[in-house]
Length: 194
Image 1 (cartoon, helix red, strand yellow):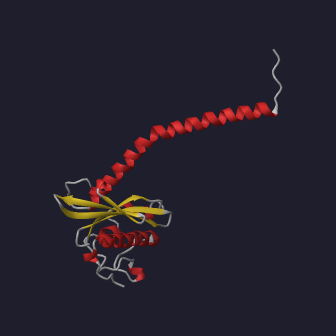
Image 2 (spheres, rainbow, N blue to C red):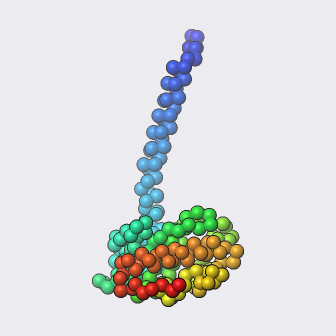
Image 3 (tube, rainbow, N blue to C red):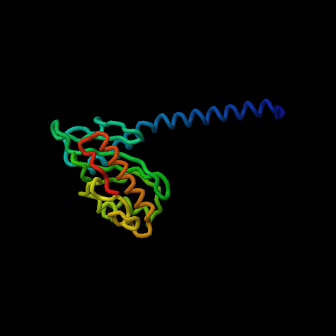
């Protein structure tokens, strides 16, 4: 039997079938992985919330309030709020820095967590270490009375050596989170230091 001559129509048909099969496979993979990815993201978010607020007995991830591009999670012990976890995004040296900042009801920073970043390994990536200068120094501070900027720029917080941009992005995230916190807690609307 002789092979059929290659024609433009045959090539278009073959490429169309290949594209449909590939698109179907990609859709199937996306469908299969969507659930596990969503569960993983939820676990990461829940861990970040638990790390930044005092002990709670509710499910803060179920008590969330969107504020602009940010989200506030309320942690309660009984009916009383014990803390607020504010998820914010800010621009770092390598890209977007996603972080969670925990506040006590009076506006004091309880703790922070870096959820994701694209900072330089060995330099800006040190922001994930809770003992690095900016993260360690903001705990227990209230942004209403502390200048949340690097000392080099007349702030009250030390920057990571050779990573001023990342440090300032982190501190900007703290300020953004505090501004969001204040929108939900008008009694904490003291003026920020200049």
